[in-house]
Image (cartoon, rainbow, N blue to C red; front, top):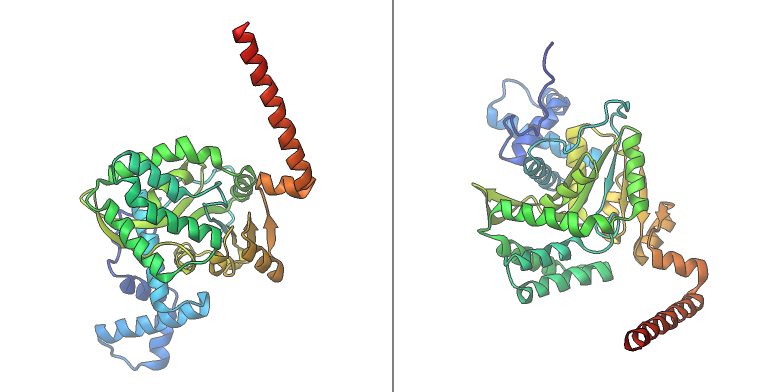
Length: 361
């Protein structure tokens, strides 16, 4: 019996170092390059001309299929290839052999405030500060930008670029193994307990249907992949920091996966896995993820910010809200909750006073 052909991003298989080499090959494998040459170029053709023809055909294919330019798709390929290499293989979890595979279908989940409550980046920053990667005073400006981004739903290009540079400088020269160890501690001690059960049930629904489930997040890929593995997901795409001989160089592979960066990575993943995006589903809480949400057949706003909720209603997207406080407000109203809170406070105060009296008696 012949072995299955290696996946194009399998670490044991040679992989092009230049995204342009890869996308030219990708286009050729789907007949785009051949048709381009047959229709537009007379043979014989030299290597350089063939390379240029492949890139031109790839540009056309990406625009037609994903609505992306060549450079955007190339960046996505870099992010996906970096994530797969960080995982040491194409999949973190193999599919259940007893469940028929739904070929071509997948679900993509944002992490912060979609799958877990709060910011994974802040949790990581605090954990790294405790391990003396840097001081809290050094990381506070980066944390402030992250909080501002999460609460306002808007971002400043200068903030993003500066934050990216600062974050890379913080980890430059550190061992990758140390980052992985910290990430494991944070996932197990902090993040698992903050998972929204409703969102996890949605992910399990896709797994039970034989579909792939991927996390797509700006969080460092090591943290995202540990979380995905704990939950039995297919894989995770995250921000990839370059390493050399097990040491972080302070450079990025691809780009930070936020906003359009997520769409670029999902497009690259869809091409490599031959996913039909019209049969895929994406979940997010943020208006900044509209590029990813709008490229799939089913978009779901989970715990949405105000702008995304309005956009979801305008587009007819599904909305799911698993935030307990907001659900309580919708169910009972603010005055009732305030009254209940005051009653609970008085009850606890009386209990403390009784215990104090009992100790002095």
